[in-house]
Length: 134
Image (cartoon, rainbow, N blue to C red; front, top):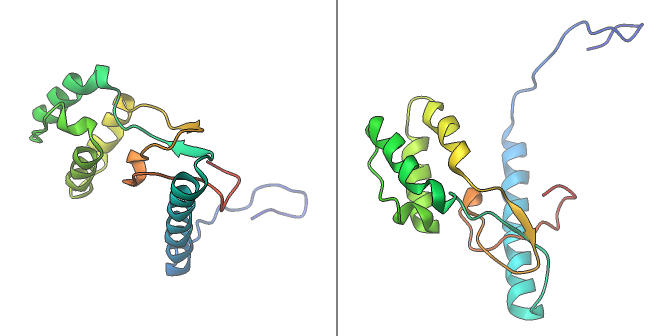
């Protein structure tokens, strides 16, 4: 909140509502459908691709997780299914500590003219057409 002279009086965090979640999930579903149409019907498009963990970091990732009681196969975690399995295990953790630690092992999302998986969303393809933000 700002005062009459533009000074900050207060910072208010709005609670997330179910409507926010519905819109987010709808946009993800629409973007998945867009990717499938572009890939399967048109044969071309612009996709958001996130390939999960950098293969060069897979062994270090597995070692880090092992020190915290999570056992993953370094090869399996490089697959979409393995990445999603790890995400479910991390989501069940009482804190976000490990989640924040493993981000440095991940590759960056890229814009591509070739369809590919979006590991971060757990999808086989993703095209952003509902928003101007990737």
